[in-house]
Image (cartoon, rainbow, N blue to C red; front, side, top):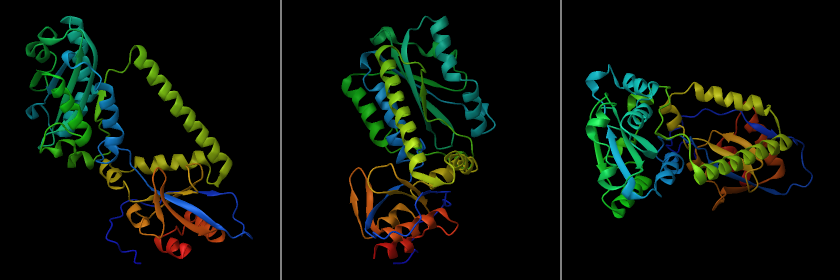
Length: 341
């Protein structure tokens, strides 16, 4: 099997961790190794974004009562800014959306229970925002009014609309959850423009009211504490199982690698490497190898739902592979082909 599979590799090998035991085993039994696709977890990634940012956004708004919801599209006038980058940085730095809502509540007596926005792009690379507002009053009595909004949104045009019925609301949230953008035949709205891909500036895709209220706040806190406990436990397990490069230094190196990349390079690297684990589960992390996940799945093994792609190697060969993963040589696809044959 040739390494030249036509898959573009844009990611460089990462520093890796190794198991404590490097000795030759007398009990040379087969060991399971599983590979999973390395992910960028970027909100603008077509694959990762739906599982992270888009999912959180939909979960936040989908249970709103449609009678109380208003949608406001906030656009920008390109004539007011030197370029797209200056536009997005100015609006973000001055917190235009949050300040506009605060001023509407303070000066116009508008009662807004919750609000969330998502960012999309025009074909010319300039942004526009879909702002969803959960109002205290339903129907026409909950309308804010274009003149009131324009008073505090000086960046461009605004379009305020209401939700017609429950089907209309389900269609909006359902379509966005599936496709990651609101309008049909406009997939480019969810794709980071070229100027942004060539930049290291991180652009948020969604945002909204920072503090959840009542039961939602409690649920959010519980969810956060559960994830934090899982993260701490996993790090303790790694400390017990793995050695080689210190964990703190390894994560610091990972941060430095990411800091030196543009947003486009981070997106392009999604799936270009494979994370390797010893056995099933996610406790025994061996490291990240410079083999695209699509190529790794060409090996003689099987895919297990909820786990990843699993192959078997003998203990001594496994130790050799671990040392290659950790060392300067690196482990390539041919090493794994030889290990499982």
